[in-house]
Length: 356
Image (tube, rainbow, N blue to C red):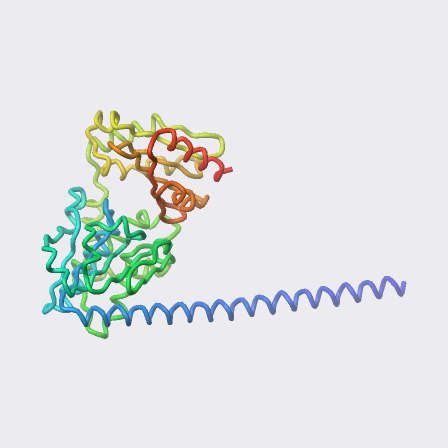
């Protein structure tokens, strides 16, 4: 009896200490998390100070973004450009790069001479790697700033502000405005429209897991500025007949394997049949996204000298795979390149392994 009583007392005491340790761990975790958040916030504010200081220092500011732009590339580039034009009318503000016809409703680029880069501040938005900067004259400026939300695999620039927790670079631009609105920054309805387009695009209409409470707060504030949300949505997601038919082809011809990985190959012949450019076809990468049991998928787009790869995932991390094939991006959305269909097949085989 005494031994049983003693064992029960030891058990109770052990349970008490276990609960105390767990509770202490929980308290310490909250304290440490709070400290980390404060440190991150302090670092972001310091970054904002540096960027705003550089902007105020230069009379000419040229803003770049990545090749083959999407709404976030143009939204962050154009949104920042419009904010700076409104805030500093005495400065020369330019946005440069290729004019993507399908996104002409967002922003038309400026055409400038090489000489404009002399003594200019250059800001590159939404571009993880230097090789993907649209208009390689970005190196000709006096100072370079990188603003991006992709993993910082290529930390170029005199100032590098990368926030992988942000839903989009457009969200970062709005956050920069919120910091600077008491320090001379002004926003317009047009800037709000551009930033909102970027956020909507990179969050997949707020369906992707990168959509946070902060993202939605910012969106609410942007809509309150008078942006016609429905008009913007209609412009962003209207579909040409040929794209709709290509979507049908994808749904009829994709291949899915037991591991939960899928692919579709859009050869040059298929693209010609539907009269669709490779840049247009990139927009149909989400066509397979709602298939039950699908974990990750890849869209292969054949061009004259390369096969472009669009990777998407619902769980498995894919950006490391993309890096192995001349690409990169986010954990759930990445891009890559293959030099042949044999290499494309190897990439998909690797994707199958990731999905196991």
